[in-house]
Image (cartoon, rainbow, N blue to C red; front, side, top):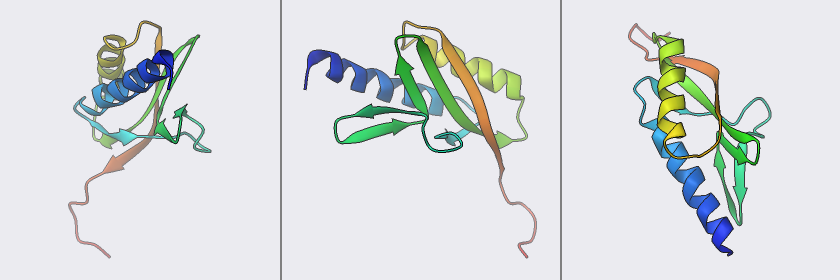
Length: 102
């Protein structure tokens, strides 16, 4: 593995961990067809795409949450890791089941 590939691996994993650490983020999301990912030898980091033009992070957020605040917090957390513009897409919402199940 080249040094650039190793650095990309480290950067993508660290960006994913930073996004997942934000309160309100339930998980990373691969996009409509699962194409949002950083592809690495033998694996991929789903929900984070890093290329020359920037970084895209796609997340699922827990309801209820202030979507703008969560997106801004994800952007801030990931921006500390990458040295490119960060675009955040909220792909889905999820809610904890609190009522009776049917």
